Length: 502
Image (cartoon, rainbow, N blue to C red; front, side, top):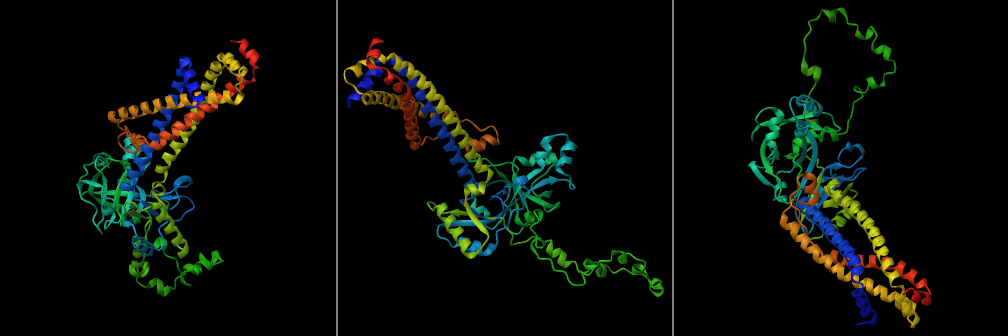
């Protein structure tokens, strides 16, 4: 064992009180670091598991927009930007399905709406009932699903009552506990098979559709599912969101149809001559032919039908071990090569603002750790200043018998390192004990915010060995930084004067 290490251990034992004070601070720092990182890692893993298993799969393909596009639409100022559809959907879908490592995929679309009665608005609902709860019961987050393959991509979704939405059939599935609140909202008992009126919310205007409740689902046990989330057949969602044939059709007018647009003399349009009728014409019997007046309305009906090729996203489930990052890079390169205005991303892109909450928490925690580290350095430094000043005579004696400045610095650095490692390991042991106690306590998330924060309905901490090593390295670095100043102060004192202070 090196001389400096032996001397460090001896000196720490000789100054038990001060060593204990500094050591407790170091152990507390390790405890906060390990448990804090464990909490963040558990939160991130829980949210990733929840979203990939229940909502986003492993990666998402969307159209492009000015803001980031997620499963919940475009993140933009005001949140009113229209969600782009996936261009050349069939071509993109077939290409992804043929990629190695792709287990399953499905189309998806999203929107927002109100469970309403005769077109009543959200504000009117709140005013009529005098309760904010009624307004929240009216709001629905709609996931338009491809009933042919959606349920196979997300097999964890469990039906509580009724059944899944069938391919080609209209229907909506709501969270099971919400059926009672919907009944309260509509002032009538709502059962499986009953129809409810949905008012679409978006930039395309008010659109109403009556849709039957075909079933209810239970919230997944491994994640946070907003109770407002409802699954709806894709065609109904398309109409509510304005994803109709006419919305994507180019408008073409004939010369006769554009004749009025070219008029420059508007007075002549409303002159007496314009409305003049010959006497013979006035005497003729008047008959109305609605087909002649309205024309053929079949084209108008066609344009108002759902655009069956319109999808907001493609969700992809990969085989175990297949790298989502590699598939995303491969798809984006293919989109660029083919000139397709689409982009692929991992589950965090799909989760959008929900995944960003973890990053925000990590930033906040990092800032808190930096502040804590600064405070710890100051406290440890002050404690070491007192300790070193009290040992000024000892330092002077060592200098007088030939110990150089480098040896003294090495001795104090060894003391700090030994102290940090010993009490750092104590902090790690306490962290494991604390994590075990917290896990055994089965702390439940009291609301949706904590469900997202916990990454599930229960707090579950799992300490990562890498986090333990990094925490020990950080606490040793803090100790070494803290000892520089007091040792530098002590070394400025002449050995003779330092010996006189003994």
